[in-house]
Length: 164
Image 1 (cartoon, helix red, strand yellow):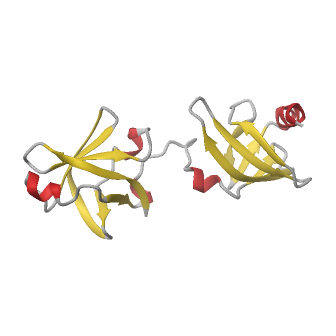
Image 2 (image 1 turned 180 degrees about the vertical axis):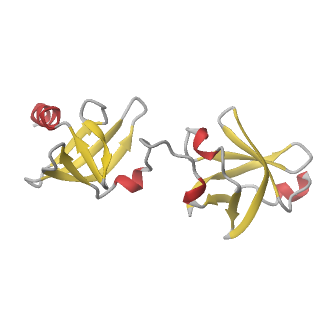
């Protein structure tokens, strides 16, 4: 189960819900068919993504009064229903992941990821037991293969040296 947002209010009089999403990339939600509220599975009748919010009609909610009872409820979804591109991951899926070079040399472990708007900053505990904070740049981080974060070793070492 993954938290996807909070119901902020009813939208209109026919029971539509307005949900403030946890992730700003709304496209990951476009194919969900069911949500969970209070551990109860509920089918989605209609889902639209607009203006940074999720709007949905769900089974069992047919008017504004019923929708109002769900205000401020947290909404969850089964991970399998989310649409992630091959190069997309949730932060918690990357934590504690090994960092390796293209020739599979172990360089460290991801311990934290902070989102600062322009780019994420990845904290790595290296083989010398030092924390290194690097910007998530495609020139450094090449992707995930076989459950490991693969990096360009020369760029990794270059950036590591710059911050020492």
